[in-house]
Image (cartoon, rainbow, N blue to C red; front, side):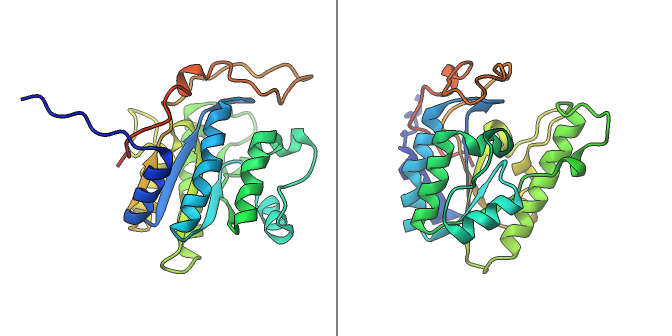
Length: 229
């Protein structure tokens, strides 16, 4: 007899289920350099109130520097500065997501790996070796962030593409394989709005922050999903 297909859940339902089972819920967005899927960030804004109602008070974000998080938490405003320095946080839809989180009462938590922690001069920043170092440092930073909070604190993690995969690849070890769920003996839930994107070329300098879905269309087609682990 053929098994019944698993029921699809909305992103809001997945986040609610995730926090009912875990202290840590990880969600990913689709981006590739400055190109990104706007709808993944729109979903992020939708699920923030659900996470807050589930008693999550901490939002850990990729590409968020410690000084940016400190200032944003102090002023309750999204980080300010030149777009080129802010990176993803200079993109308008990401700024809206961050501001929504601050308005709700979330504390922003940085976990991005510093360049000096992952590579030496002359290293290819896109090499597998450097990528795995970054994954390991980010996992360590999440473990430390969770350990520094109360034992019942709930953490929502916003990352890119495949960093939340719990199963390592042949040579690639994603952040979630050694993150708060394993190293802190805390069960985590990973929620993927869509499959990971492929890399695309960086746009020309004169238009670095265009609202583009170039190279992302296959990552933006599904808005219901199944809980991944």
